[in-house]
Length: 216
Image (cartoon, rainbow, N blue to C red; front, side):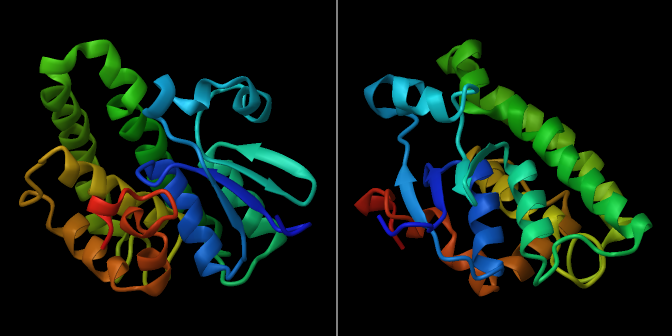
């Protein structure tokens, strides 16, 4: 691997990894991907090697500038502070806090509740219902918030960290067969974002570890 190139430990289907891949693409940061398969071998995130990188045993982890960072929002904030163009957090404090609020709502309030580690605990037959309930409950709140914050995207007309959280979460919703009809604002923003190149190149169907049958 090229010296000095950032290394992203990622799983193609991980929505948290996808957030970071979008940020790296938007900021035109060249990086290497090291796939961590969350299913194979009982989950490669539990290996001794990966544990040394991220004690939480989760992807993503990003090696950059001589440090290793876990947690997708912390990674995005670091990239924002060290490589500020294009910006993902608006300069205005009131807009910035809306971006952070929406990002946290998704990253703390929706995604963890329907994550693989939680689904394993609820039993195979309950997984779909559980995930749907977690997502719809969060999307009801999110739709309401976006109706007052959104322009073309989540907060106004500039792509922000909130949008990087939205698109992967909508993909999760689709995977769990959630009916998106009650969420027109979420659906409209998602569609606009998916038309952008950074959201396409970072898409789960176009990763080095995407299985052939899921490639597009």
